[in-house]
Length: 303
Image (cartoon, rainbow, N blue to C red; front, side, top):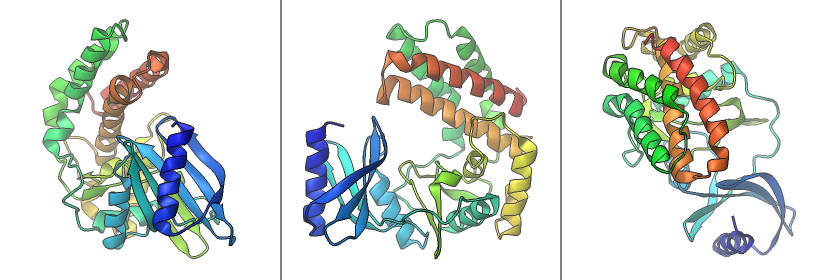
């Protein structure tokens, strides 16, 4: 983000919030978003978060979640400048400890019980089973741009998944179906001295809650269905619907969840490659991640 645009966005937020200048400290910054801690002259602090598409809907999602009773940081002010969303958020401070699986299950139960918001994007069965076809469309665009030329194996895997997708997507709307955080990881759950807050709602949507539960343990390690099964059972123990354990698409819930979560990630990586990032220099890393996930998908969804 250009320095002048960043400064203009912050100036707008400070004016809306009735604040003067602040000392800025970077917390996390990348090409499409950033997080800074602001310290004001009276010693109080706030979080300055900014992002461009497709991460520019977070203010609305946070406000909806808070209205519906989900513990999230308060939004003090928001503004849009040249397509960039900026927010002044409640500063939760350093966490008291890292979130564990019990914390994750508890937070997921609260989120999945929350009333569905009509303004959120929806990923239903049709949308889910179209993910491999959408990924193939992204691949076609990449190849027209003379990129991903040595990725025939990616095309073959996506073709196989697309052919099986209608059958394997059965059960998409089985409970829990509603709010999906979409970035549901321990780092997105702040455990403070007075309770927890759920962060990072930039890509929240309405869909199968199993995608959140499958994302909790991350995607860097080999998918572990047994570990996820234990997490699903913890979710039920903490008050989540027992339907979370039901078979879907003739698969155990944990396989279905891990497989479709990886497919959701693959489509997102490929869209980033051609649309949001669109930088050929990043292709080797994206291709490597996509290949790894596709191998997992074929195994998990038994294709």
